[in-house]
Length: 344
Image 1 (cartoon, rainbow, N blue to C red):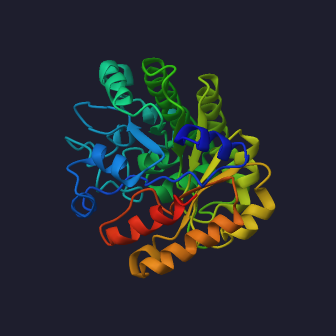
Image 2: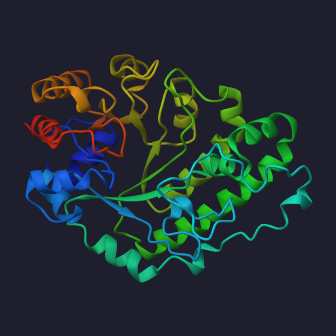
């Protein structure tokens, strides 16, 4: 099987020759050591050298305020949004907003002005034909809404002033729907899947109740999933942490793959996830980046991959449990993960 065949079989929980495997998106500080270990010069060469089944493509977004789509909104009035150090907990520009007119001062960006259509095409065309072309859309409307108020204020507004929260959230969702449409049209017929999501889990459970997830996050999720499906794309939905209580809601919203299996988060152990949900949805992740990949030996990494393969004969994309590999992960452990995953 080639990478595409392996991926689509995995999504449909059909037999595979070996698991599909995804490197994720190594942090910029982690990249030099990986380049050196694999003897390559850049991320394009690294993806090929690792044997990644995926080729991730980020939306090219450049505005006066931002250089990344996930940092498109200038909630703090800074000259340039810091895509590396942004936070959800600092007070945002809507912190004091109580009435809808208190939102009127904000200038909402138009993604059509800042997404280069030709660059979208070039980035996707760079991917080898047999690889799974994965659009990294993010579209993290819950996280952006939290940042716009400051997380504590946003969550209080969900209870005490839901109308003002929902108006901001709807504007953010509309921004992403328009941005994604531009990208999907530019790359029509060439993408295979997209990654969208919102971090709504902590190590021990959800950051808000399942009922609030259903009210404030799932509707936007469903719109984004339906849009992607209308272009024939599979959807990988990302949320860090323990999200087991809302996996049925994500399945109902049409999500094809849950990302990640954060192995050390409560209720996210691979075996129960397989037994509860394995007939309804595929998963991605499972190789712990909090302890195992950081401190474990190459043999321990290989043993974990073997265990995951035994639990999920199919229906699992093997990957680090967070998409952003950090610089504390030894490259030898990354290689061990892929060496074991790629055994037929």
